[in-house]
Length: 291
Image (cartoon, rainbow, N blue to C red; front, side):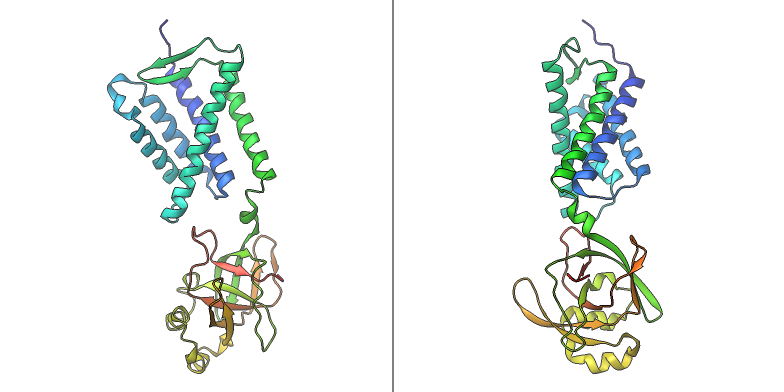
């Protein structure tokens, strides 16, 4: 029996499915995404799904090409942060694709819907009613959404807050993780200390100060204090996760505003740390446990 494929239906259906899979990827990985980029990536994926049905373009159906195409869709849909974050995102994306494809086949296998599984140009096509495919796509998304809530897969994302730190005549915006393990206090003022990567303060604070903070040269505190009196600099004893003890520069900001809540945080110092706090770049500051 000849298989009749309607290109317009195939394109729109795959665009819908790609959009739902990309949304599910964002949900599980906790990544922010712009709707316009998701739509663009879904359209590109749908176009690829149409292309692989043409016999003259059978090369595009090779496994490596298909994986490369999936990787390209992720670059369209999500902002590239670093290779670690990208590989993590790709892993989630391909797992969700496999789960969705397996779910579609299981539904086809255990129901009387559809006549049979067909093949065209090496591409397998499950002959399910259009309404069933659309319904399954939405059911799949809501199952993923429910799973994310139950497993608390977005817990870290919920704990990351966008903060504006005001000091001197300027301010810096940071993504701060609420960290119950950060119990750092200034031993003199007894104020809690949040930690901020130097990378988040480039262009906002003096490069000389940031360079000293990165190298741990806190012995130049008197000079730094005289150069930047408005920061009310001091050094705070600090112990990292490995147990290594050192000192960090800390300054007293005018205020810190939580953008999600629209309120000011309790008064605290800002410690400048030269090490990277997040491997995937999802946050660049650590809030104090008492915040």
